[in-house]
Image (cartoon, rainbow, N blue to C red; front, side):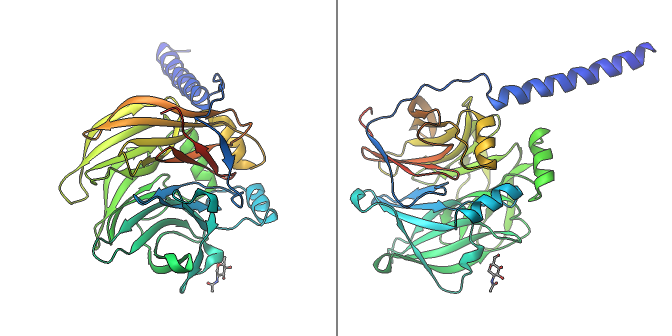
Length: 366
Ligand SMILES: *[C@@H]1O[C@H](CO)[C@@H](O)[C@H](O)[C@H]1NC(C)=O
């Protein structure tokens, strides 16, 4: 064998080995979870097939997406979803009346509820009218969309207002709303196909992006990220927080004026698979729901009966910058499978999951 061929082959082997080591490390086989909770916790009745994302208003009203069905879901998962009678819905929870539990909202208007598979969520409150609008990522059977609803408190209903559909919206995960008709969103994989998606994940191709809709045009504002996941805006809407799942991190961007353009400010590595960041509407601090052991989460994603680990991290924010990390909750899967989000309000916290239950905890440790 010629010396050049040897060099080429051994370099190639090194690249493959390095990639495999990275994959194995990312899967988290080496990790162990020690359980702790911030106070007494209980499941909220009625939520059994996921509570992927939560949007909580300053007045304590929370909206929770349930019944996630990804376009890339396996045949087995689709079968189990159907067998368990799971369906896409939005639950309502009032932190000021926790005893009322999680209430499924009815959907009004010209909207196909059988083609509703909600994922990320955010809200917009109109200052003059006081109306609350809920924006939800929807994986429809044929394409993804952002659905806009108006909350009708008296009827405990959501009235469908608009569907945002565009080529720029292909496989989206989350939305962060900046106005009545403008929002950021993440495309976390470049295709809805199961095979291409797996390819992208295993090869760790950074093909994800953040885009902005300004009311008229869609524009990609950040690209080259591996599975960008949840988004959250600071209370004053000047900072945007993005969580990445693989190589878990929170990235902080500063918005330029009211436009969609972003300036990178900070990256905090989390050594866990970060899913959705949320901002505490009372304190302005940041929480993130995460999955510390990714290979177990992959099991839960394939079969919702298989347990996986959960974790909630809290960060203090000063001038938009993250500091002072606290792990508020950790569970090995004995209680909660694959937490995706948490919302803190006063001394109460909701923790949502990909496709399992919704946990409500008292927080006595902060
Ligand atoms: C509603 O969605 C379901 C599931 O995707 C589909 O089978 C059905 O044809 C849709 N109905 C209408 C009226 O579009």
